[in-house]
Image (cartoon, rainbow, N blue to C red; front, side):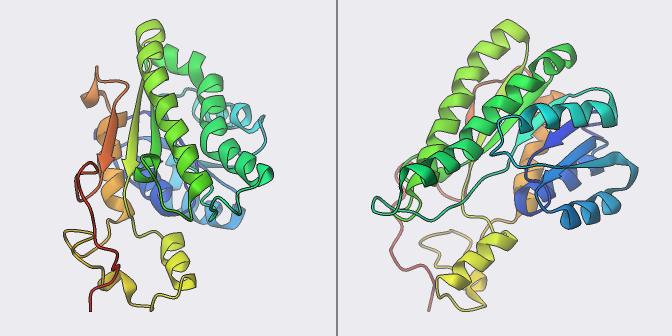
Length: 261
């Protein structure tokens, strides 16, 4: 077991990538604090994971949520070995629709909350010589036209990861690494694309010019990568931005046609 006896906090873990990471961490021997805003979904997952998981329901838009999350992990497991900042607010907006309120809401959850969680967790991660894994997006590099605020927030999160990955490793022994995740078939992504007008079978018809396999990644694939980066196997690497995608982010120019005929 690669995470035996570790205590791990995973934000946004009642659905999608976060849920897959929580499941994989428990399978690898860790105890996991599950976090989300939907208590029913959280309780269902914790029941599935058994005695190796606990639930904390909170809204990351609240600046005090980070301290409450860390306290909940310590209360449940007595220590903290890793933080996975996975939660994100995916809000459609472009240059016309991104007003100050929307921009601040997206930045608060996608960038400020990870910073404040790391800040609250730092003394405990220093004690355990633990680590942080921030889950970003390939949208950080440019982003889609209708994901302006989201893309900006993920660019900011990548800078946060580089900055802390350098300084915290040298001064506190705490590593920080970062995934820029590509197109992944989560429950929410499936519904987003239905709302965009795609047919129910759209995940099976993705153009290979966009994704080499013609299939989106699954959350479980991202979770498999996450295990390595929050385990001791990835020491002493810190401050790295890793693309989890089917194509090279630099140099790949997909066609505009999303679905194959």
